[in-house]
Image (cartoon, rainbow, N blue to C red; front, top):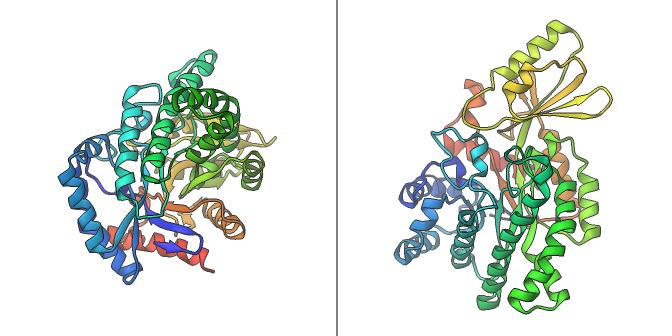
Length: 401
């Protein structure tokens, strides 16, 4: 939906359905009811997640036309896509495979171009589109001495998508950008790492690539890269890493690098007590959040301010935490709740980022990405439509205050 600070919606990865028929049925069941509650007299935007199978299905012109007709009928529109998870995201163990296939593969290139071609046909006239994607690969699949080769190959493959996005814009005037999403244990984990990649790999490799492939001069190639490649600012991921939001945004502005999408999401956090018995109580509370489907990386801040990273919650729980003063865990918990028993959420980080956005908007797309509803206490659980509405109303309350 339209707000003074950009389009706002939620990511439909909360709804199952890896093929288009299954996912479309979920949209038909849920989206009109959500729209009726939030903006009955105005268009409602959708943050569409298409699995690879669904994207292949929508190559059928009849299926895509039927979806476009439904969007018009319901007063809805698509402005952003989540192109990070390629395969199964529900009822299966995901863990590090959320990065599969990574940007070293042909499958990731073809899938992302397919998403862009679909999005170009769905976007309302005059609107730009965004596709978020993974940060090239999963760090622990590669030896540290081969990281440079991973960055080079992944960047070259991403540049093929950029060339396709430039072609889409030249053909029909539609602007679509690919937004890389740093996250713990990705090849880019933080805002500064994304900025460094942009400067050290994307621009040096991308300018000559676009000159050769598209016949652009150096200035036009540089401009195309900055237009079509942006940051996906996932607040949960930034909060886990104790990042300095103001510093990241300031450096991006200085470097002429843009944010394409803000994913509004929350992590778990808790300061760790020094008392051994109290510490055990806190760690036991975290242990109750240990589930087998998704990675729940933990970043522990130490007494000296340094950060220790754990690949998943069980690894963190098994480690000595005597020097740790605070834990933050990757969990995408619901936004509206500040506390989960004795644990807390990073809700204050969301409030801070949204306040910075209100002071100086740095993206035009905002997307709520909550998908761990089961962590709520029974008295806070609501049906999924009510839960999504509650999340979006919480965000609207913050940006309209």
